[in-house]
Length: 261
Image (cartoon, rainbow, N blue to C red):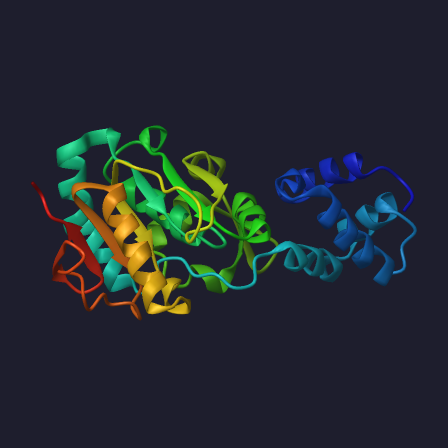
């Protein structure tokens, strides 16, 4: 394709504040080349000129880059438990030294939600969250931090106003200050070593796809990764029936604590 891709990435950033460097270049370039060819433009410069003038084409381009399936603050009542019980206790004990892992984080809505909620208890520059997934493509999308409006439906308005910028008519870009708080890494829950000394592990709506044997193994590894008194937060379809056998206590559905010694 004619014209240079580096210049195109800069133009896109100037237009939308979307950083295409967050994506693997070969895959993203191929997708964009396909979109440009579909619209019958000869190269990047022509296409940029077109999306500057044509609002409909601009929206098509933004939607093409936007994450399709994600949801901030899924099950808001459970996030309220984090806000009123888990985080206050955790911050009181460990201050800004809290260690949090968002396991199988998918497109980033969960770790970014954790950052925003935790920002009510400490400054953003003190927050660091580990976020992992097995899928490179969703990690690329998570790093980009671009979401459809409907993904933010359950998110408290204060967070939308404070941490997002609207892009076009139906997409939102999360701010760099929140992005900097999350370290995204590739990780296989069934094979790779787990992080340790964690105060909170969030792993929701993932282990339902595993066998009972694999689930137990994962929950045991989570237990080993938590500090005494640390919390495991699971999805609304994933109550751990045998949590006592694994060493956890539970006073609320979906929240399991490693027993304190």
